[in-house]
Length: 188
Image 1 (tube, rainbow, N blue to C red):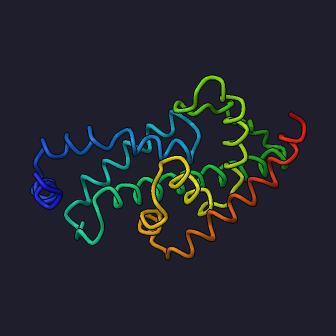
Image 2: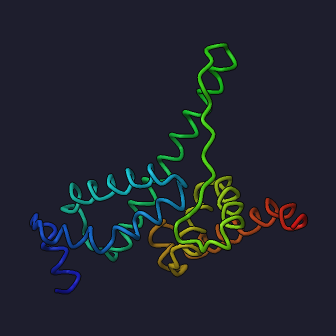
Image 3: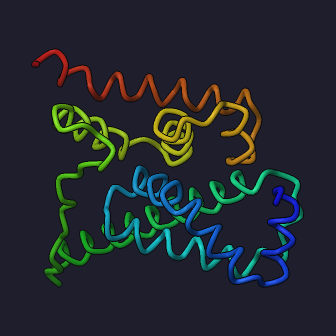
């Protein structure tokens, strides 16, 4: 079955086609989201939300892009939205603690991406902490290209921006990471 036939089956509500979609793309969706939110439990929840959104909105999929591009777009958007909500909650918690309402601040756990080899865990953890401080679009472009292995053209399609914009985002992400990691590499 080619992609157009597969999409048609999804749009007709074929349960087997949806199961195939989930089975085929669940690791990609989870890993993309995980690289952005850096929390395994939250990434699993968001990945599930991605597939729920796909199930509910596949009728609207026009096929202007590849199915994988559409899935990446939904995954990245959901992950970035979750990050924005987390940052808002964190700021509100800080304000509440300043005014004496003593809401406990949550410090994120030390993050280890499951795809990183054991001997690189410390370096990867430092890199992922630095990536967490990148602006959303820089982080998304960097993750899609460097973690997920997408081309610049595919990343532009996922982020719905131009090739030049993606090149600029990745360049700025690399510059920002270099600045953030300079002390770490000077001291190691």
